[in-house]
Length: 110
Image (cartoon, rainbow, N blue to C red; front, side):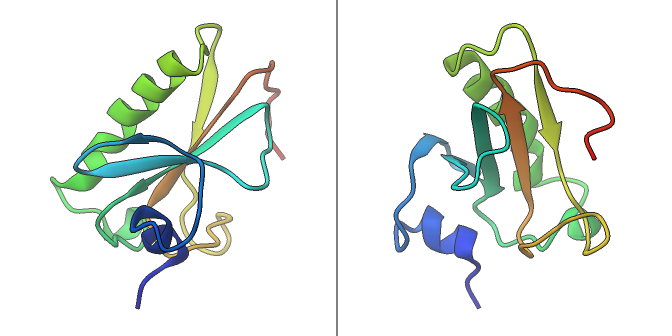
C-alpha cells in the first residue's frame, strides 16, 4: 500500500518539491510550523526509524537536509526532527524528516 509520501514522490499528489535525488525527495509541508518547513522523505517505503537498516536510503536524509538548508538560506541555523511511533508524533508510516527554520526556534519544542 502506498503512503501519502510515496504518492507525492510519484507525482500522484501535487506538492511543492524543492529537492530530489535518487534516494530522497524534499517538499514543503502543507501545515508549516516555521517559515521554512520542508519534509524530506525516503523514496523507499521504510516505515520509520525502527525499521532502518545499517545502510540504505535513510543515510541520504542528512545530506539532503544540509543541501536544502543551504538553498533556503538558513545559514543562521535550523532544526531537524524525526518522529518515531505514535507517542513520538509520527503520523505517516514512511520514514521522513522535518527541516524547520527561518526564525529562532525555542527549546523544548512542546
